[in-house]
Image (cartoon, helix red, strand yellow):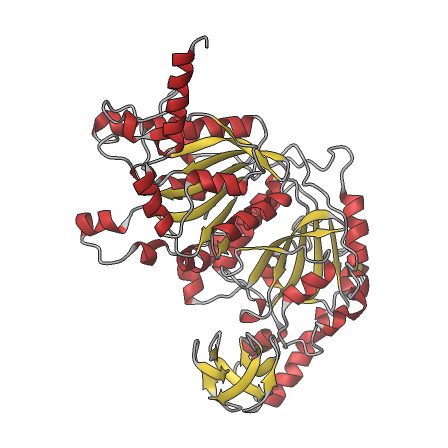
Length: 516
Length: 70
């Protein structure tokens, strides 16, 4: 055969690359219950759709070529449910997928190509951190993000404008690059048992005598409940792939498209006639806002983001009449729906996502105000309230506001209230508003009260809280029958679809920081 | 065995179940008055009420156990 020795050489190089860090390392990885980078790509992408670039890359440090197949990171493109995506997967079996110059060049290539070609980027993260000694020395530090054409190459690892959706799964121990990538991503799924932190405990033990573990710094609970870096927690790798695929189903491939519309499942809206059963008769009784949302939207279409962070607010993607919408709703079951600073951060992050990817927003009000007090001030509540309004002012996707029950004070404004930019704002007849919740107002104005005095004064304070005066003066656009809310949303979304722009917003929030 | 804890400090306003009752997931077990709101405390799973550690008008703290279910 012509060129036989050349073809044999190529085949042997490719085979070597497919072996990853070698059988021993792969076995060790499997024993931890984890899939290899190539197995992960195989499970996530549609069958036989992976187009790899950089298979023959390796470390640029002399003598390390054989020990660093693909330089510890598998990169390419492929299909997920028939849609093209860019994919990067850390290969932990090669030097713990520590980052080096060639590794970074490969990642940079996929990042830039995905954005330029309008494709989502999916990263499967697992890394021990920076590779030493490769990144040591003055040349090491200036080239850590890979070298390239301009004097701005480091930004490719740490900076981004939201043009295509970026997703990351945290698959195992993830220090360094996967953390930066998570902080830049629109959607972070963390698997139980994995950790995500800037530094690893092993290095910290030596450098600052730290006594805590990777789990203490970056276990799934830390990011799901305390930092809000993760959007969802996965039970295992298979669950993680399922969640990533599901999220992508709500996203356009890039910001010049609208999200894909899907058929409306039969039975959607069937329980609208009973929606008022969810709302308690008593204005001070809490109820679960999720139940209300599920009644309104297409069946099984709720996709919650950051469900265990800032729980006084719900931010979820859903479908109404097959169209993707972003829902921001107060949750009366947690602190009566009084928004805390975490909830405000969560809301801003969600506004950025929806504004960047042409997803109309629906706000459901039931908040007595912000959660104030010393803790709130220490958490910079003033800053958070202002930031949320600043973000809201820049949203250019359609905004529909529905006052379900309470919409008091600045908090009501922050929920896209009257004068805060809703395209359409209506109230249920149960809606109420004012400067302060009437019971709180009664306390402030009249000090400590007997039960009877409080009751009388509360009734007095409640007098002017009805939404009808706002409808009369056209501060709000209507008061609607709650049972017709779904129909109202379907028809209003049709009206709000801008045929001049095709539903493509101006993306003014695309450059807002990707994490808070 | 599952324990139901107080999500925030407050006062028990109503106890809606008794020891031995069979309950379903999401069923309201207690009403906790806090933040000027009546907050239903619901079962996190299907089961039987084994123990009620509070009665009406009790003041409770965050994470205090209110109900033990089996």
